[in-house]
Amino acid sequence: MGYRESLDYLYGLQRFGIKLGLENIRTLLTRLGHPERDFGILHVGGSNGKGSVAATLAEILVQAGYRVGLYTSPHLHSFTERIRVNGTAIAEDEVARLVAEIRSVADGVPATFFEFTTALALLHFRRRQVDFVVLEVGLGGRLDATNAVTPRLSVITPICRDHAEHLGGTLAAIAAEKGGIIKPGVPLVLGRQEPEALEVLLTRARQLAAPVLLCGRDFAPLPAAGGFSYRGPGLELAELQPGLAGVYQHDNLSVALAAAGLLRGQGVDLPEAALRAGVAQVRWPGRLEWWEGRRQVLLDGAHNEGGAKVLAAYLATLGAEGIRWVVALKGDKRPDDILGPLLPLVTALYCTVPAAESAVPPEELRRRGVAAGLTGSVHATPAAALAAALADRRDGEIVLVAGSLFLVAAAREYLLNQESDRS
View 1 (tube, rainbow, N blue to C red):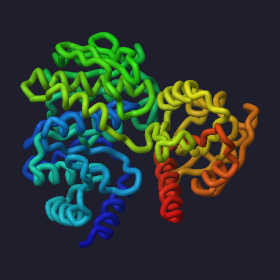
View 2 (cartoon, one colour):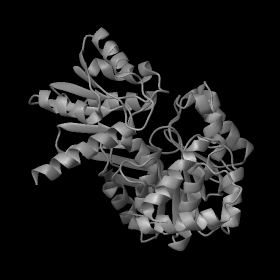
View 3 (tube, one colour):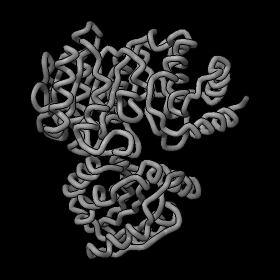
View 4 (cartoon, rainbow, N blue to C red):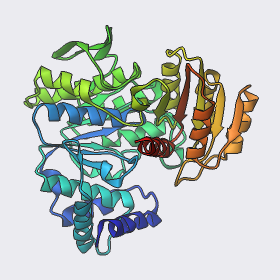
């Protein structure tokens, strides 16, 4: 079985849909000899910022000289991006080998795509003899496949209302699901939380005797020229230069630093130079990403209310002449949650559909924009929408691509193809 056939098999598992529960993944890991027990695991959940935190933690550990696995989802361009060791994605032929190996022991286990992929990642990390794995939660937490592990520490970034059909309709219900990754006695780092979510998380942490570090209470970023400073228990760092754009990322980077501080307390050697280099060198494509470093096209994966609010706060600092927004929303999103914070800041909408997803009809997005006093147009594909926005763009204006990571991926592919055609 080659790589393409392996992907066909994995994507074919999506027929099982999203099936929250730990029975399947536990069975797979048992049959594989429990690869998750061979390295230290840092478990990262939440609604917004978990990818940035995971990437930063991994980069800090790499800078300190450790061999580090990073498991994230979804990918932007290639399945292999989900599984990395020291920044290098898993090889396609290795995917094919591991899919065949896991299939050989998976008889009678109706594993979903994410369950099978999680087992594949953990097996790959064991084969690569990593020291640590930074494991990003897929959906929720309590019943997510990644929760079949016992980590050295847990992290929960800010929680907002998202995936209500799976996690519940209230912030408290969603927090209860995401707080399911809290383990007895395992240290917990919390990003800033709404009071309703914070109460749920702190209550569970107390019940499980899990020590807590809370952003804004126990540690925090502080303004500094060109970046930020960090102050937390046993660790102070002045004038850090972040590799991720946006003031809101200072919170995410501080969450990663708080986790690193806990690891230092556990005896992990993390010199100050590694902490600084990790913060400075981390990259997370598609999240406040200025294409080619120029202030013309901004790509951001904001796809829920929390993400839209922090994106809006960033846009408000730019002083742009105008913002042309290429927008597409997944069908299970509430448009007002995402459009509400952003429409007052933009001048025109280019409405389309995200690839490989159900979608909010683009005509509905256009109507909402027009009702808010904007110009709006509908386009069949993200590429067509982005091409139109770029053609209309004037000096001093920004083209924003946001609303879905699938949309951002399609936009990046279009821009990469344009670069290739020019070369």
